[in-house]
Image 1 (tube, helix red, strand yellow):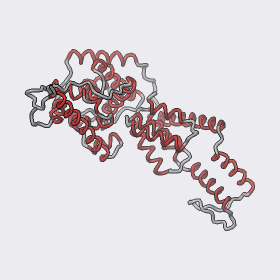
Image 2: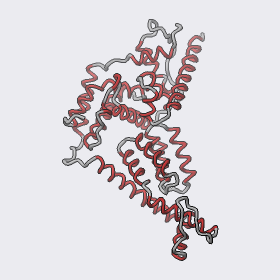
Image 3: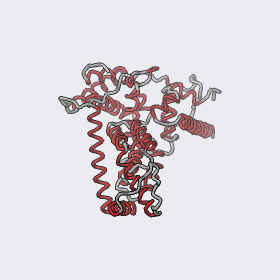
Image 4: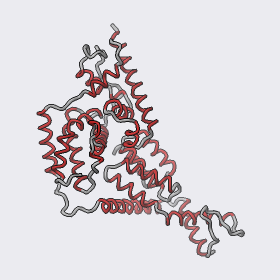
Length: 181
Length: 215
């Protein structure tokens, strides 16, 4: 890690990784109105670690393949988990609007597809959703996920599979529902 | 609907997220600066990371030991009674017959009861001389520093090296907490159930439940 002052280092990291941190939190269930606060807390946690002499190594701050550095990723993931737990959000059925959904981008634009994707989160088990987002959206390979989350690759593949099954089933049901007169 | 994979379409859209609007970014930067300013100033001479971890681990162990002692006084389990009996027999029959590492006696005259006493003594000797404490202290420290993944690794290593450790109660409780912090709720609940089965009168039971229930 560079020898600069901790606050300056955090601001530098914030400039580099603010957007990715927001994305990571948003994908893990942090509401839009709370995103800024939660993102700030991620960086404040990192600052506290640096001040306590427990700052991340250069390797943990290395942003490979355009992803969040592992130190920030784990803090953001933990922050989102604590947020969900504190909000006691346990919705069983999503309130997503599947009417008009079409896989063709010309019909259903990216903005609507993104909104729908996040609205589908409550249909999926929390662990499975996290694995799905890491693998399909954030680009982590299974070996990388296994190392970060201390799980076997096999269990992670299974989680991604059950998440996709749940999403497909929901999309399929929604489409059938939407076609009903 | 088109023939494209609907999930692929959603993934593609989500991956294509770009930066946040500039106005929001600037407001968030100000918010971060305010939060950083609110933090208490850093200590003048920061302790080494190793020192911090060790101190934190020792404090946690002291608290655990006191809680365990209080609980042991409140409810005397059969295991405690056996250990008390072991001490008495050690005094009466001193010196004890030679023990192998596996806990089997080589004294031909030892009867079945004495063998069971020997096993208890051997276990106590093993646990008092081994290094399992280091793993537990390190795992507590890792948890205290928001590093549940490391804690889980250390606990797994402790379990592999010291499967019959006297610290298994603490280890199992810490495992529940680490899993819970990692967001692996289902596994945390299963580990908590195993904890209660293995240590039904544990003083750490309430803490384990609190970890699982997110209190």
